[in-house]
Length: 79
Image (cartoon, rainbow, N blue to C red; front, side, top):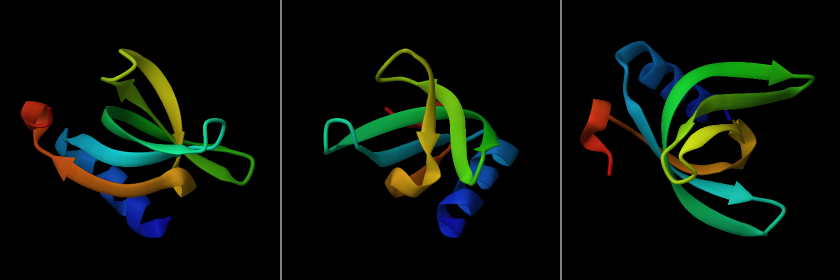
């Protein structure tokens, strides 16, 4: 989780976009997401990424401990 957090913070500082593989527990599947990060938010003991998900075309919450892979891309470089 700390490595994921560091990459999210890097994207927030640089204005980058995140490409990630995200595990959705309710559907028991991993999906590819491209997210424009807004902020990190703690709810109880759980840390979340709040951002605009291009797949859903809406603001979403992503639990950091469910992010399986993550890459920081420059601005609009992510598809």
